[in-house]
Image (cartoon, rainbow, N blue to C red; front, side):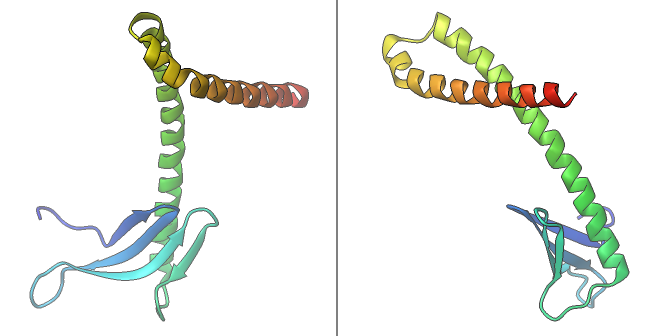
Length: 133
């Protein structure tokens, strides 16, 4: 690998990450990854792995990663919604211009229910915001 490796590696999982300390300062000059903690993004918990005690540097680095990860996930959520809008527009164009009767029959009920559900949630949330503001 070219360049200098970071001191920590975060293996992302569903609701957090496994945290590894990277070590290249050994006799074989091999990369060793030593798991030091498990991170739960949902509740903000940092659990040391096994009987380890995390240093303040470990905790600071993990906390910094958690803050960066939360920002990344928030940006992805909004990007996904913008993509969904694009897909809805593309779906409307497809339904109007290229879809066969059989294709429309296969997707119409599911699309209508999903759109009705989304509309209901959006209208309720907008009403809540207007009454608060």
